[in-house]
Image (cartoon, rainbow, N blue to C red; front, top):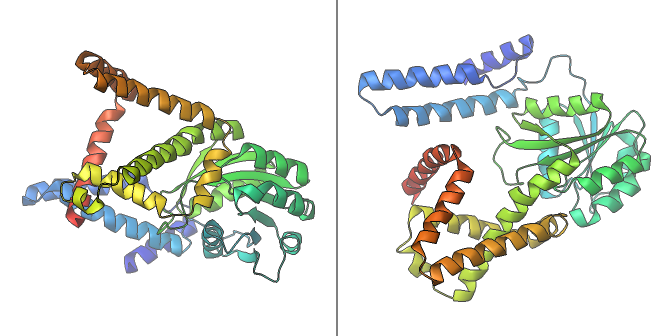
Length: 348
């Protein structure tokens, strides 16, 4: 870490980002080659060095290696700053040297007061009240400032922000929850509204903390979230509800579980251990939810019919159809899922 400190300072002075994928690839390849010469497992050594690289990146980010030396400190108001995601946004921007103001239900500082004092106002409140808060706060955002949200639905909030302020507008959706241990390689979707200069500022700050940027229109984002969030959460909820209603003791099933099934259980149990007020609006407010859930039911009925009729030929055709859809991604999925299963077995 002492060496990493020197590297972080050098990167900041030279204006380089924290992550250097080409250099990391070269390091990993050289360590694999060295492991082979020594009669060690290349996979094990690569895993070890990936942890070292991860720790290095996170430490460099904490030292603000990705932030240019001439970066100007801004005042950031976070409306809903005591919520889960609001706290993470506070961590992200304060770590980069910005002054953060928190406005929430339990603060003396109101959302309107915070917005009037800030260069950037971030709306981090529940989906159900997002548009109302935007309409209240928007008129108080300075014309030279930025109004930004972190909601998982983008169409309506972005339109509301554009109508509520004369300042710059940016829609964002951090694709991670409040419980993430660090920002490295997490993804954030950015939907430009008004003001490219502020959009580039936000992107630069996200990248400085190691986030991956995905740009999209609000419409593209909401269509993608219908698959990434609505379909994923829906299938998890159906699995969890089915298990609960079958009533089979969980402890009995765990005696016979495979690693793959255990991963499914972990995802389901983790999902239902969280706040339904978070997941309900994500699915209920997406304009494509009905289309997605109907497609799921149709697919479930197709599989049910194949099983009921013991149609092995049709079952094989179903496999071929889905395999063709995944294409070359299947190879990556096999490799990456094997890695996750191996790590899960180690911890079991």
